[in-house]
Length: 121
Ligand code: HEC
Image (cartoon, rainbow, N blue to C red; front, side):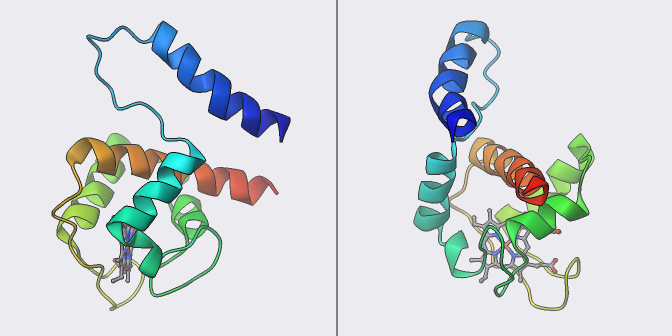
């Protein structure tokens, strides 16, 4: 709990201080940001953090890509934006034309990190 508090309160502040604005890398999503995003974009219909639904759980995704290279993140981003099947089965993921490249990258980083946390529990 303390750790989560530190992460949600302190980390964005540290980022704001440490990150020069010129380096406009997308800021890390908090759990609350991610929950809002999954709700707003409908990811929640097919995905949950820890349980298999129509699509794999975020923990399963993170377990499959433990040391995701930029190429892996790029491939995942393309699948989130344009949809596709074949990595987990034949059920396809729909496309998400309203999700920006930066949002997709931020949420993928959250997914890959959240799964790593879930597997520590
Ligand atoms: C209609 C159901 C559905 C929705 C809505 C959906 N997904 Fe998926 N998602 C799937 C399915 C099914 C798969 C497995 C696809 C496959 O086998 O390649 C998947 C796979 C994924 C993967 C792993 C892809 C891979 O190649 O390993 C990620 C990451 C992901 N989804 C993120 C998201 C995000 C983020 C959203 C919301 C913007 C979202 N999904 C919305 C059904 C969905």
